[in-house]
Image (tube, rainbow, N blue to C red; front, side, top):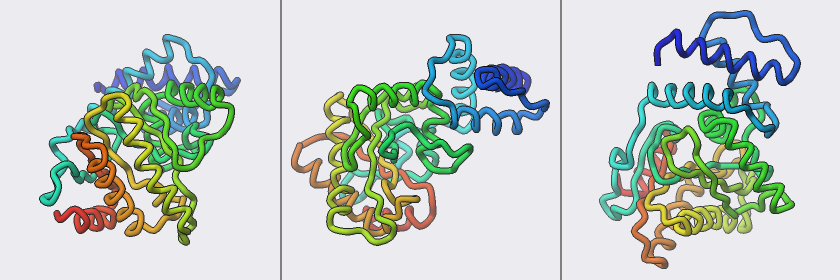
Length: 261
């Protein structure tokens, strides 16, 4: 995306986000500063309706930024020598063009409200756009309660290269998982796969559910993930391609060992 076009879009978007809150927009012509401001305002924006003009500008900006980062296909993920249904890919899940990506959500399912936070929930909501929080709010309103741990809901992906997002609230283990936490984590994987299968999706990328601020130990969580996915594939006879998406070196090393890579 050309710098001048990016700057113009950001100025317009920040102006509208500030106007709807009754605050003055920042006086800066720096694109990085404006992006940080846009992201902070979007991260903390309630699920209000958005104007067509705002959505058009936002969508152009986000799709341009994702294109700059580079979109990646399922074929770029390394297949397991022991089971070619399973693949491993290290990178930013918001750039992965699978049929579905999995979001590690919270029970409110409205995304992360911490401005610029580096969690996956924040990244997915940021790059999908404000439409995602609006859809998630509608789901929670319709069901009349917060999202239970271990279940899954499927939404549009909006500006992401994936077709759909599957949201699941993992267990909060705080470094000391119980048997209930282990079963809830396995249920997250089964529920996501069931949701994807119900819409006829052929590929899904899993993040490392519950291993961030929810504190599920990484090695144990990865073992549950791989075992549960294999069991589900065997039980259903599904030919769905499963990508385990990792972001850090430690998770990559763990999954390489589990997948024989």
